[in-house]
Length: 325
Ligand code: AMP
Ligand code: TRP
Image (cartoon, rainbow, N blue to C red; front, side):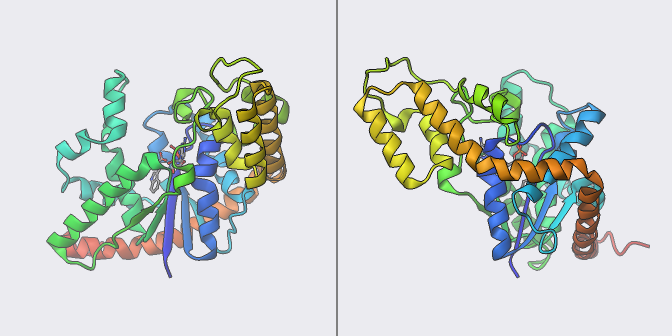
């Protein structure tokens, strides 16, 4: 069976970019694949150092998958840190990777350009991510466009390793990126990202969500002016939640003039709330019973670990590390 794997960093409350770019596509893949989805805690540690928040965000990330319909009977949902082999594989891969490649990674380059703190974890982030992917014989990696480069790196590392030690060691993965949601814009028009403070939260209570939606930036056209839906952030976000007919109708109103952006924002809030109300309820129920989430994560870890141990046997044997005593 084809295996799909992806991760989400528990570095903040899940947002609409996460939902449309990754969570929904990943949940849909459970119909046709064997899903392995995990909470990328070690990755989040490169930026988050607050234990309380960290615990909370891990639960939120897990509850998000479940609230949007991930079936724990089909999928393994687990925490990265429950499979210690991932660190072992990350080390082994790292001894085969040239620094120059890591210097070209987007996350490192942008942290450097912005003069942010860069710890060793930030630098080796793509190596750990490759270990995540290769440890579980992954075929497909559903992600947003910002992760494409990382998945391509994992492919290269896998091919290089197989070439050196034997073609059967790693499965070569492929990214799966939905073009229509590849990059969801935030309230300021840049890519929506936890680190830019421009997110619309998936589970923000309706009143606050409405306020946030009203903050989405637009151009400064007057009410009477005709407007261009295709260059408008509000319209781009509307398209993620509205039906085709609703989109066509709002696009007509943009072009006709006489409609203010306030109206478009209210329409955006309404379609969002319609889509998010039910999952929000399930989410709140789950967050109220964290033991249930913990049970799912424990079962998921057992499933994931059994695959990880087999991969590590191949890697240890091929490299000369040999079987564990
Ligand atoms: P992260 O929160 O960085 O762990 O991202 C989790 C997943 O959400 C990854 O697959 C990202 O590519 C995806 N994602 C994050 N932000 C966006 C966005 N603005 N548009 C589309 N996908 C996104
Ligand atoms: N780096 C990913 C992100 O920020 C999260 C992640 C970690 C991941 N390991 C992964 C995604 C493996 C896919 C596969 O979104």
